[in-house]
Image 1 (tube, rainbow, N blue to C red):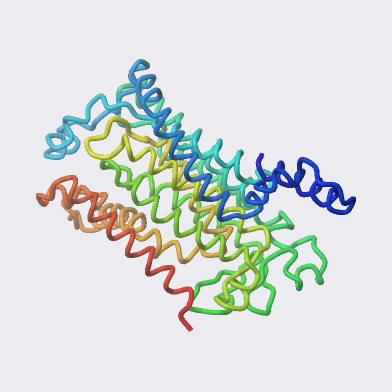
Image 2 (image 1 turned 135 degrees about the vertical axis):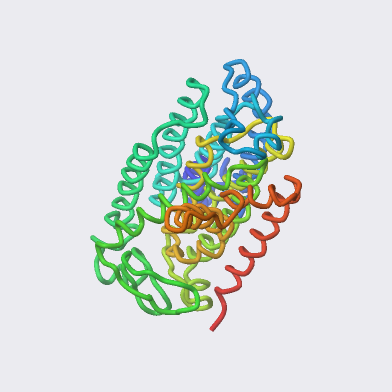
Amino acid sequence: MLPAIYDFWYQTFEAERASGHQGWAHACSFLNLFQYITFRAACAGLLAFILSVIFGPRVIRRLISLKVGQPIRTADEVHKLAELHGGKVGTPTMGGVLIIGSVMVSTFVFARPLNPFIAVCACTMAACGLLGFCDDYKKVKEKKSDGISSRQKLGWQLLIALLAACFIYFKKEISGFGATPQQIADGLAGYRLGSNSIGIGAVTFPLFKIAIIDLHWMVIPFFAIVIVGCSNAVNLTDGLDGLATGTTISVALSYAFLAYLAGHFFLATEYLLIPHNRYLGELAVFLMALVGACFGFLWFNCHPAKVFMGDTGSLAIGGALGTAAICTKQELLLVIIGGVFVMEAMSVILQVGSFKLRKKRIFKMSPIHHHFELLGWHENQVIIRFWIISIMLALFGLALLKIA
């Protein structure tokens, strides 16, 4: 919305300057601020935080009145963990609607909603959030910890991810397909890495200043795997008060920084040698809105939590982060920056695989944050230490940009 106001102001300002007449546009010269992505990204984060804090209590009261308390697994299912988490019974879930709502409003106000990168990330977030909402609703309605079946959930996730992947692959402003060779060479469409243009199918990593491999159309299933994997990894991480929320902040902040750098020709192509797309900087506004919304949600989600994000929030956040990683052409870097999410997902995979193959468990319980709880760590210790790990991994991932 505000970028559209800036565009109107700029046209009027230029017309006034050409005519030599100073009107309202000269008097409102402060509107020039809205051309800067950094300013709009900061404002989006601040607005999302304010919206979350203001509407948080109302949303929580509404969820309580609707009796959407989080079902907790029984002692027969989780044994000692049921004692540790017994106090969480009845805590309202579906709080992810607060995060999604704050992000969407802030993005609409401060970003250009029709920007292809904004559009695909916002739509993926909304679609995954709707799937998570349906899952949470079924859990609450049936008073069980099991919602939509794993097969159904995975099927819908794959459909959403494939639609997002196809949009990214075929949208010419993103991929460069459909643009003229000269436009691609000039960086007006598609990606540039150093002095060379690369296709949307190229897979990159900061340590290698050239594309590692070009998957061509096979990149579509690769993109889908990234989105589904990230969505489920965040979902698995959301098992302790504020754990997924705090981890999301460091990951989203890192990718906001990456999007801003990748959207600037000189910084991307001459200094850092990372993939560049002229439309990509705008994505930083969306990601900073996510950062602000998570800070606001953490106000109520920190231990002891007054509300849980539920699958409504975790699936939505994971879908948005996975899509953002694809848009910045830093899919592999997500393994480092989102290392805590990867660690949580891998702990489940290893635990299940070990039990099926050897009938033995590697961890006391998976995901791995429950393992440390059962080792005697207090919940706050697990949460804060995982936050620290997440911040360190994010810093390390960003440090790789300038190596070599």
